[in-house]
Length: 522
Ligand SMILES: [Zn+2]
Image (tube, rainbow, N blue to C red; front, side):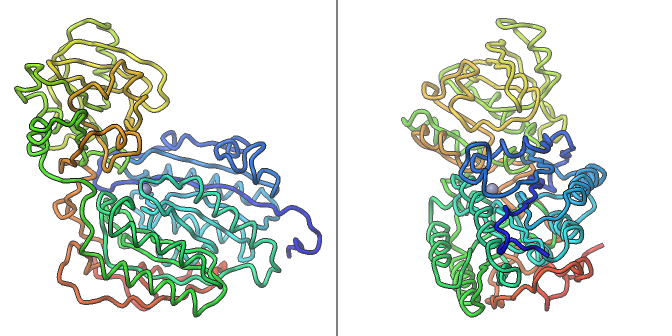
């Protein structure tokens, strides 16, 4: 039994978690090393607020165990997940008495052969730490919250901005909420949780908070949080590129006043549903050819085209060559009438060939399609090696090959290109190019700021924005936009009972206590 309030000792708070967003439509796999596991005190250095000198550094006796963070990719093989999970559980068993735990997750990890990986992890953690340890998480709004996950945790919050400019603030809020609740007597620490799944599943590129309707819907979240009796609120818009029964939008409001959290959760969920047909792409979206025609016709420079289908930050393998193949075949780029920068294709073999040939050499390469062959297979790339850069933590080695007016960045390992410095480091000035074609969805802030104009190309890959052509068959139905003309769903809030160690026995019902799992095709 904890005696925090009477002894004034610092709370003991464990930290662990696995962060990944995994496309089940990608043939790639995320292995242990892709999580770059960090252990012990090094975990504290990873976030400013509890690092040395940070505002919360002295607010608790931190017990950091294991933190893994992978860039988005494919699912985790079961044996890799089990090893990481066991290490977290062993660390918690060895930690001694705890008052709280920060579970640092994204919420869209998939494990091969398992549904609801975060739910599985949270239930296992709850069984080890027992019912009295308060567990808090600050998630990505693209994460999924099954009933099981919400049940195993005490405090849940998520980002309120996409792009996620408030990521660090959210992680800090999750920790502050936990520390605040730990000052209360044991019987008053755990807030009530109102949970509402909403049958919509949308790509992030339709739900950016820069535009409507997400802008107004997410503005409701801090309003709800400000209500008396409410601790926190969140809209988990969910992750569209995994085919699991849990995947859909979820609203959760936590607090101490049952009537108010139910009212606020239902108010937000009702408004999300009322406006669900208003979600559209953040930029004009079209086929690649239409995007190129628009870019060539425009005077806006640089003109940015988002090559969205194989976006590595949404879980695409990154080495689908369909777009590159189209660019190489375009006479306007081949003749160097226009200059274009293309980022990027991971291919360790092609990169080594370029390194061996050296800057200035002409190379004939077969690039990409080693993980995800996509519809195009490997691309034939003949050009001149213009630049070689070593040392990027994700890419490891980057080379630039010029073919006509097209400069192609190849990398040893998969890497997203979100920053101006990512191009400058490679001897490329994105501001002086006519076109910038990047494997990304909505533009991250620096690219958004430098784009004179932009379009989103609906290209193929594991993060295809055209969800209907991916072939989901395990998500709950009906689900918008897979089903249209839907009747209004039941959006009454379900109060989630307090977590207890028996939650493993709690039947896994992804959408509610009263809704059985929909029949699954075999
Ligand atoms: Zn996200």
